[in-house]
Length: 203
Image (cartoon, rainbow, N blue to C red; front, side, top):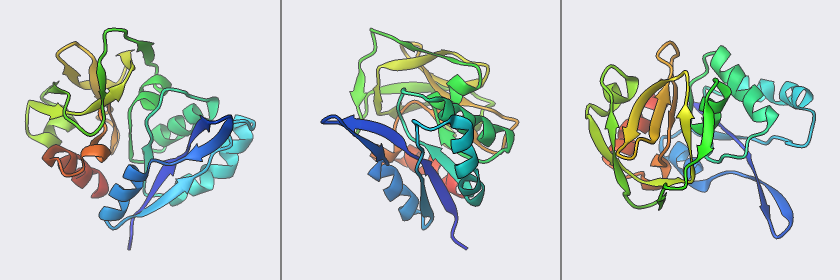
């Protein structure tokens, strides 16, 4: 039986046209693990309650959900994340998760994290976290692509960078509710990316 991994669409605007976008690197990772990527197309202009009712059945059809990167959140995004959280559906993401579960996102001008396919900086992983259980290391090197960061969150912080940016959040009471600030899909052959995906796709 092939696992079905849902990907929530993101809205992108290019040349004054709107697109419902899916990151091809995320799709590629799902397929490399012999799972079925399920694109969940969201109408961000619709009434969020009505739109959620439309897509809830597709979410329930999936075995796990990946939330794509980005900091432009809509009400429907947070309704989706709250549902994933309440229903304990395995979820991999970051910023939308942290903001929905009571966190705060802020632009940090000093950040210089803008290399998706190259290593940028180390992160420090706290023991007694799921991330440490997965990585079996207290420090790893990651890539990075963001101008905003989570500055506080009720979720458990599992990792941080040298400049004190929160790099991972999780909820130990859930099967898998974990967000990482870096982009493991862009450095798929990295051993630590493989550790994370190996664990996520075997849940």
